[in-house]
Length: 595
Image (cartoon, rainbow, N blue to C red; front, side, top):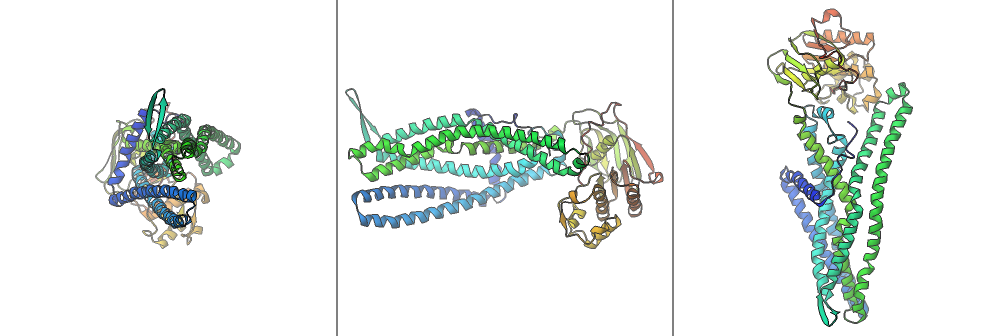
């Protein structure tokens, strides 16, 4: 996980052309879902949402007609008609509750199905063949913070797309329906200009259009800063979460080195970034709220003020006046969709941009890995390095060309600068492709790579030891035996205990657990990369004796301290740096590879 640096570089552009291009890219992004697995169920849900949206508008038309009858009954003092309208209202109320509740349930089912589909597809690429590791090495701002994009941005993308899409469809239907109602109710007014009398039919429709056009234009002008502000807010919040998570992850090291003050200062600096993002978003929201508040307050009395003179002159009834005012409000409400949803649209677009950027980064990962690739293939029964020349991902040479062959059951020590040797191990594992030459791995070999910091998933201890196998594959008695044999006997018999094992176990215990894992996997090719550096001399000797006893026929390739006797290794491979000035301190790749 990296800090997200996309705050300024990935701000969405807000011109109409760019908006159109964005919508087209989103359509292309969304289309595969509707042709994927369970497509007919999802299409059916979409069709049901559309039908229910039509029903929602029908309910609004019924309420509009009902209000005209109500006010006419009140104006005419017709008690029988008034009492009958109460029954009609109850029926309309029940219909409204039924339609809106079914719509909500169907929308949420569709939203979650879409989110699951995108998440699964993204994980299938990101969490496959070390793609998550390689993306972390070459990612620019488009691939930063993938965990936040997968967990939060995909959720916002799918949920808001359905919500906003249904709301937009509702507003279109509402506008088309109530424009016709308002046109009919408005009648014709005559405007005298000099000696000329100009008849204007449906005048309230034109008033509503002008009113909404002015309001929408001002709102869009006021709200455009929210687009960039929302993206910035998400970025700085993600960076703050990253800083807190990192401090928690390395809490022991921070405490031991007494780095609390520096770490607190770093977190406070990140918090200041959050404040800057919050202030920028607040500024955009205040601009919108000031306008929308005035717009909303004016919306209710405005149609009455415009239409009331016709009622006062006796040209229309009270029921018609109120029905006309409600129809005006419905038309302007439909036209106010961009205003009412500007903040949501800005947040949605920012999330969509981040999700599409991550998917583009994953799609382009192979291209980013570069043209100079080390070929890895599986054949024969030995490990062969043919002209292997490891480079940095920018093409900088790391080590001199190396050719070697390691046969089954051989014990080989790799000597050289640790980061360079670690890159060689990553190359053999297929995770470091930069360079030249060919790595030939034994066909059908059961390989096991142990690093100085093995990955321990949160969960029951038994599953953590068996990882990546499940406890159902491992026999509990075998797991307990393995724990005892690596010096973790105090945890035997407690396989159901669930903890955050990274925090519970010490570094030495975690390395012992990786050897217990090895006992369960029974590999025939073992690679040790600083796998015992947290153990004391006695602990290293214990693990070395375990290797000799349990894996006497396995090929063992070691990097770094192992406490294995000189006679254990049959030969030593020397890895030479490409240049004497190779900066080991600047090397950032010697990080634990999850095993």
